[in-house]
Length: 196
Image (cartoon, rainbow, N blue to C red; front, side, top):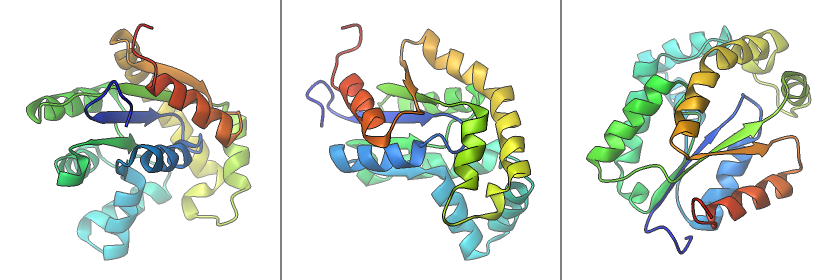
């Protein structure tokens, strides 16, 4: 745990395939806080075969985003769990400024807030290349699906990024660097007091 935080609540933003999951897992291990992944939660719903899971699967296969209500409900329930009291690494949510405001409201009710928001920046062409090179190809790794998710990301992303930039919480990170380099940049930002 960083010496400047009693709890460490982090958010990782960036386009699909920018390395958010990889970095979130590394942060969770380093700081011993849970990695809260909306992708994992949604895939779990699909595997369970729930009505919500079928809705999620259909949206993902079309390259669409799952509805705000479904994702927000899952995430907010998860953040209220006991293992998140020392902090969390949230990846895949929020996806819009509206979702960020909902997240802030719920965390405020829990007496908590976000410490840092990391934005992994990467070009669309590099994103598509990374999806094409995955060893295990999922249905939503097809180029058409990836490009549709990128289109949605670019439509909603700027307002979300601006939301956190105005609050002084946003830390842009070059996601095209190697995994270890990106991890080092994030770690240094966490362990440096805001405004230092």
